[in-house]
Image (cartoon, rainbow, N blue to C red):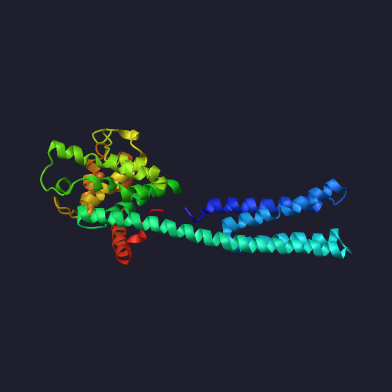
Length: 329
Ligand SMILES: [Fe+2]
């Protein structure tokens, strides 16, 4: 995450504010004689760069300049009060103010450049993953929007569960990438119209573990890998690969399962015609406690069909503009 969350922003602001106050107050209060205290006085003066550099890292150039201005307001009057009438010392100390501003501007500009570079890398990762998902969706579903819709439905359900921002991020990643393991499933099995034989089922059922292995190798997708691994588990323990049941299944996988079933029922597939949202709600209700977590089903049923339709329309519209609108990072 490159953007600061609201809480994190306040923590950073507090750290910078406290540092300015502590360094400023102790510098003002530390006398310049005797000699050992003068040494401490000078060290404290040097510490003014700390809040400036931190502000540059967290708030870039504007933050660094603002902190440099505050530090200057604290420091400049002190120069004339403490060293009144000693012109040479005043000039020397004013040189410190120049140092403060140079550090603020240079660190602020470099922080901006570094963050832009990191954003570019993140966008490249995101673009690569979404291109991969689009290719997988197009291969199996004859529409490339399945994963994007499931992601949007799952995130809507996730909001009702009060998930934290990192959990929502993992849910978004896992929903989008849930079937990435099917990259290893042959077309003859994946696209087969008739029933699969035992051997074909065994191969098909490998895809959650394959997905987990693929995602685990990417550090920022490691948590999503566990959710992907469990995306075919069933609440009653009849799923795969580990036949987990109830709350043994990660909550995010249980949330995902309802979103996935809803999209499967309300989309045309080679083996069935789509049904309406109201009909899908009835079908999902029937699966409560067997395939699906009753708690998630209850939350799902509490959201109106007009809202689900809105989400579907938004995904279709946004996808026309750009496929890269998915919430993955
Ligand atoms: Fe799957």
